[in-house]
Structure formats: C-alpha cells, structure tokens
Length: 255
Image 1 (cartoon, one colour):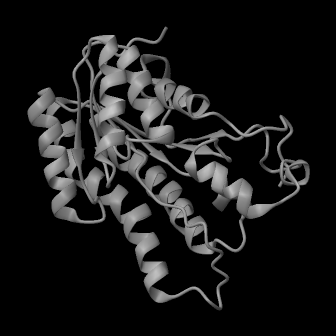
Image 2 (cartoon, rainbow, N blue to C red; image 1 turned 180 degrees about the vertical axis):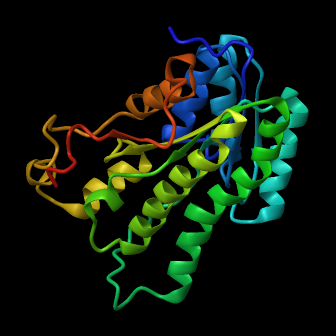
C-alpha cells in the first residue's frame, strides 16, 4: 500500500465521483485531507464520514473556485486546519449534459465552462503554490480528460478547457521544478460517475457501439482513476513531472 502518512492534501470537488474516491483513498493511505464541494453539503458530509474511518483528519469546505476569493479562502482553510500543504488535486469542474454545437454555443455557456473548469484550477494553484514553495516542495495533479486528445463533439468548450489544463500543467512543471514541486495531469476516459452515466445516456442508445473505442469494453470506476492520482502524488513518482497519465481503458487513440 502506498503511504501518504504525515502528508496534507487539498482535493477540489471532493464530494462525488473521482474527487470523493480520491479523498477516501488518500485517507486510507494516511493523509490528512481538506476537500471542497460546490453545493451538496450532505454528500460532502457522507464523504467525510467514510474517509474518517481511516483515522486521519478530514474536513470539507464549500467553495465556488471560479472565484479568486473562494479559492484563496479554501487554500487558507486547508493550511490552517492541516498546518501545511503537500498535495493539491485540482479535480473540481463541470460537464454539461446538453449538446453544444458551435453555432448554438452561447457566450455565457463558453464563459461558464472556462470559469468553472479552467479558472478554478488557476485560482487554486495560484494560492497554493506560495505555500508549497515556502515549505520546500509539493505535488499538483490536475484532472484533464481524453476529450481534448482525440476531440469530442458537440462539446468543444469542454474539450477546450481540458486541453488548456494540459498545457497549463506542462508549463507549470517546467516553472516549478526548481522548487521541488511536481505537476502532472491525470486524464480519464469515461468514468462511472454522475458525469459518466450522463455521457453514456447522451451519446448513444446502443451501448455496445458507444463502448467500441474502449478495448476493455467498459467504463472506469472512480477508484480506477483515484489510484493513478494516488500514485502521482506518492514517493513512487518522484521523477515524474509534466506528464499526462491517461486512464481510459485504451480508448486513445482508438476513438
């Protein structure tokens, strides 16, 4: 078992899906964790309760991370509660069930996707990095997607944010290496979460056809994505930075 004993982690969007699985897996590995949620306090409370079974400190905080002030408060809250900040997992984001062909994609829809999927990562990293520099290092993992690597339609605004995240992370890896801060992306294909189930329903009534690009013929569980995140922040990955870890059942470049 990978050990994160003594580590302090901040996971954004930790009340459901991959974020929730990551919080629980980090706690099982021995980390103290603060995680954010956007609206659902009840779901956040359930994650807290389950993660605390492993005996580490687990706390949640409501935040709209598309707002710089909320991101600052979240990072300050995490540092205050945990005493340091070793790990940041930038997972918070949205995916819209409604098709958005470019000729119908509104400025508001575009701006909201950018704000919640991309600005949220910048805002959290902006406030977390000075803490990591001051303590001599850290790990940052941003959740991207297979979407920008092979293209998706009609979800160009979603793919744009996830593609930009890869460029952002690779650039930060170069910039922050001298501070012993490692920055990577984990890029899932479809995952069996609220997002994944919606995608399946949206994309096809013929599940077999929809799964054709996936050689494993199934979507991932949230835990199957959380595992590579755990690896990326562990002492097994001390010479990995600026990379995209694809977790997609072999669906890229098949799709």
